[in-house]
Image: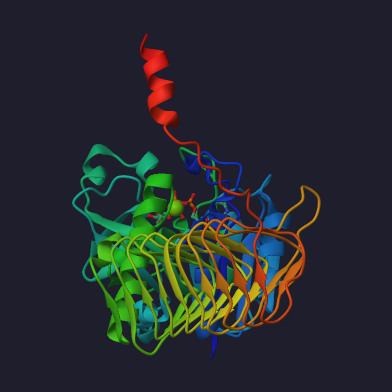
Length: 432
Ligand code: UD1
Ligand code: MG
């Protein structure tokens, strides 16, 4: 891979109106810089990220998730702007691809047309009916003559529909020659990377425009853009999984994290949400269920179930309004209205409606262990830590405070009392 990549991520991202740096805003579960770095590393062994605003926070996020990324702190005070960002970097290779950190939808495939072209500068452009916000690109005789930032445009230039998508490949020697010549005499008093184009053109360099897919090169500058980018990312994620054999009913109502995985025959009904690194194998997730960082194998969940982080369900049926947290269930049926937290439940066990594992005493969390073929009656509270051995029956309404041995029945109930004719006596009196 004879190409270096520079990722620009030093800007403040003012238009996001956020404390969180722009590139750490999430799309489909991951900070958007993840997508850019993944793409960069798939085509280059020399990736440098330029940082300034909240540099430490962004660097930490990247180093925790990627190896071999270099960082450069921009001299933002003296050299603000995208041109300042690229100064004083020593790329390893003769060709240098510059990517904006706020373009999470760029994929290796979408970069191919740029990578295949040879020129002193190759740059990405697309045509927009509404080009506002983008630098306008002046193309004549098949070559780029200049890029004019919107804030510096004349009225005529504002009408140009061809815009700078923000991705370029420079010959290293072109950067070396023109970066030191950049000035900041413009509306924002910044050093624009785009000004290199004009200077290079004056010296008869070849600057080739490549029309790219608008969808992949959309920059995220506001939360409106962020939401739009997420919609596009979701469409991609869902298309990929449907093509690999996942059935989705009304996919536009389904949300899937970019880290989720599916294996075998899986069905997702409308309104399903899959967060985090969930793994779903041969399972049916019914309407409006929420799965969070959980593993679900040969099971069905929902409608309206919530399976929270650290849960593993195998050969299990979970019904409506059941919440499962950090629990392992194998061969279990929990059909209705339950909370199962920090529990291990084994094969053949049936959890009655309204069963609650009372796993928290206000200070610590405790485990509930339930063996094989246990029948737990409705409205049971299991006060953890507690162990229920195999082949046990718990009567409906029981509060289980002590361990229950194999084969036993546990029952705790206030004995029922019958008062004959109570209703008639009570209401006659009340009516007088
Ligand atoms: C830039 C281009 C514009 C193009 C648009 C495409 C320039 C001068 N303008 O404008 O022609 O149409 O992208 O999306 O290049 N950054 C730094 N250091 C800085 C300033 C910015 O690293 O001092 C980074 C930002 O973090 C961001 C990227 O550069 O990732 C682009 O900056 P942004 O402010 O979004 O530029 P645009 O105004 O969108
Ligand atoms: Mg931008």
